Length: 244
Image (tube, rainbow, N blue to C red; front, side, top):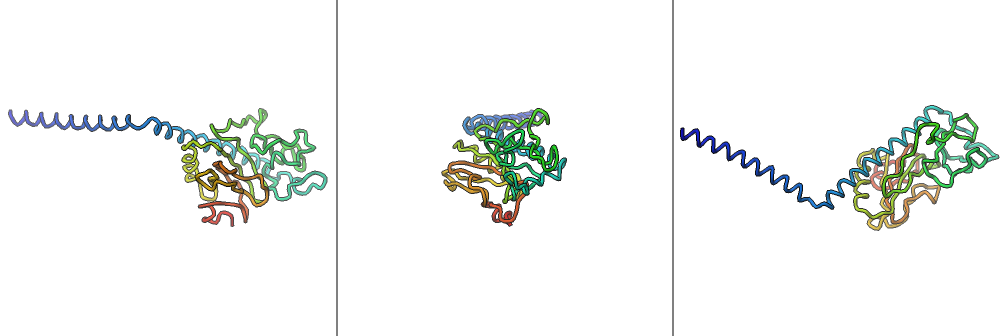
């Protein structure tokens, strides 16, 4: 009888110790600074939203390229309209391009991805390229992630890519972009740190267009669709030989 009571007390003690351990773990979790919890949540949201938009943009552009692979060869050869001799003719060109000076929808005022048009649609050698993000296509560009500017586009001598940038100093932004950079292949994306804690100077993204850069004081995340020999890369991407 005595042994049975001792066994019951021993079992009860084990449960009590387990309960104390669980209570301690919960206490530590709830004692985590609210600012740290907020930073983690913001980082997760930024990573999720940016990666989602990257895939949305790539998918929309690739659908255009696959549907109209001939593109518009007049982009590089037309002598009467401003040409884009180094652009990839199957991919959308700069929305600001002079190629659209005589088009039904004239040149855009910026490089924003929201203004991309599909070469080859409605037909080869036609400057009236159909917008990719429009009600007619059923594809709408979502708002840029919080604290970031709009996605921008490049198609010229250094290949084809799009990028996003922010000049805000919130700590989670750099953490989020570093996490994103680690999730992709070295030559697929690059993270440019032109903030005061980084180069603190303009970082050129191409060898041919001075306005395509990560501005001093900013953080930038770039996604490559096509790279060419001599393309400008930094850090791990340069070490991996992405620009060769």
